Length: 323
Image (cartoon, rainbow, N blue to C red; front, top):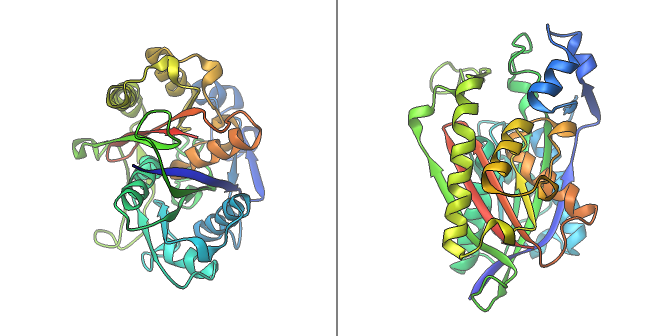
């Protein structure tokens, strides 16, 4: 059978780092409070000339270089983002043009913090049904531009960045020993839409709007939803928590990450954590964490890697990959 195998990975971050100490000068908060409640110590903030498309392009070029490929080798680009450069055209088409790619297809996908998981699942479907041989999957965000910087409950949490992977069609035996995507589990429930949202849009206010969140409600649902899709992945593949080499979660909150790992029985030394340095970068958080752990040698060829995320909507999902 055809598997979608990770051929390359890359990441990009804005130049500016905003520490918790700097955050103290903007709103009524403290480094101690932020670290205790979230695990975040700093985040990257996009500056002039740095956009979702420019960060996504840089991450894409890094992934192509690592894979020893060019844009001519791609068939598909999917960009997971909630902060596109323009309402349209899609940021993916913008990046396609920046890369000099004049063929194939490119489109954006919006599932907020679950966006990268949704995008990997979509690219895998294209590859398995023969519509693409190689897909560039990007998670890219500039959440700093939809934050209310007077709202201390949200502005301390989010940051900007981009990460990318290249998936390539390769033949597998149809067993869990195959490299590539082994299973994907996606969920959503719109009843929770008012718990994490942006209070604007072209069809309602005609403005971009600002991010709004009921933090306690999100936290209350997060661990249960995350464990649901991970346990579904185990059931679909006949694997267990003991088989997982690395859990790469959406980097929203250290307490959610630790709580989910504990509930699943996955040791914390098998969990990739970058929320302390990146903050919550929404759809970019998982590929940024993947790049960090793969570049430093923790994630190695043949490792079983579990990706998971939960985001506004609510949306949530998991992808199990043999690296």
